Length: 466
Ligand SMILES: C[S@@+](CC[C@H](N)C(=O)[O-])C[C@H]1O[C@@H](n2cnc3c(N)ncnc32)[C@H](O)[C@@H]1O
Image (cartoon, rainbow, N blue to C red; front, top):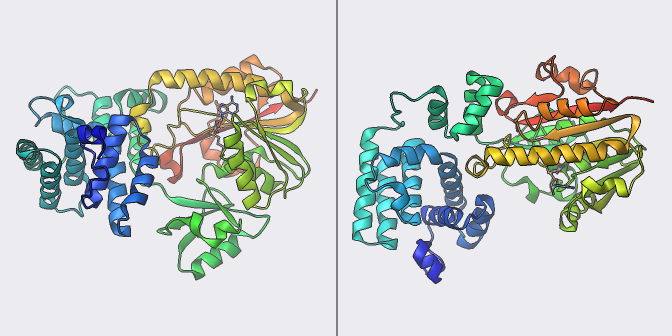
């Protein structure tokens, strides 16, 4: 064990037997103490621990569940930890949260197992006094019941925030944008586990054929109701390890993301720019829709990112993709005005539509982040729009549900650029998604509770013909 691991309470390589809970605790400690990304830390810890499939599943559930329910757990614990949670050592705080998560949210774990395991881990890592305190706090919380007891004067935003484990500022913003009922539905949906979906590479096979093959192999697979290119797979494990993936018949992609290339509506032979393309999910879809004829210039900031796009295109057998490591703010230095028939700006964003996949975002994002990213989006829109041919389409998309990055952003763009107009209506996509197009606003806003897919925004903007 390294000195820093000893101080933080992480198990390190001390020879203690790894269990589902000890591995989960180590991941939580590293996320809290070092700001590690939970998904990366979890993957690397699981690889080292060599747990059974079932235990690895429990570890994953404990890590994501504890992070996702953070404010609710802390609120409950604060009632039972006299000296205050912030005074506890990080490992003790993480252990209490992880154990309380099992008591409150995991029906399949008997309460005595959660408490006994917590006491065992506390003894292993601390001293008698700490294990006694952990035992006392958890038993008191267990007696008090499952749900947080809210203060009498708690308003609607705090009630939603603590019931569905979101920061109050986020809830307030969504209440303002969508109303309280929808804000609560968003928060509830963000706590549902995400579905696994794949996009069929239609240059190699059809959805029907791949669906048949999957069913023959015993997978619980069904056609996506959101995208004609999608298949939803339940309990299929990691599909990136299948021969379908290796042979390029499919890409793993959320159903909402599959709508974006469809909105771009590229045709074979066109010249298309994908400004922010890595890791390449939408670039490859664009090339597939073009039957791999024409050119998709796939730009991203750094070459290690454009390599990911190149790898995906190679795996899918797509030759129309041409990668380019560059700052999209400066693409005007390389391409003349009016070069492209279609432009996709799948912009960097706050990501608040994908909280189900990345629960850490709830606690790491701030309102200031949203404002800063909106500035970058504005700059990107202004920089790339000139590269579009008159009569061409510019699609702006984000995986967030913040109106300052979406609808408001596009409204302001249209005010600044009278040579552009909203062109969301009229397409095949628009007729399928009619209820998501609000009549007074540009773009299509998908919320996570709509289809159980990611929260996404897609606006189709047309450069008026000269
Ligand atoms: C939402 S992700 C794109 C996801 C991608 N379209 C896909 O479907 O796989 C945004 C991307 O924008 C890139 N990015 C951020 N600022 C950029 C800039 N100024 N120029 C080009 N790319 C940028 C990031 O590196 C990131 O890969």
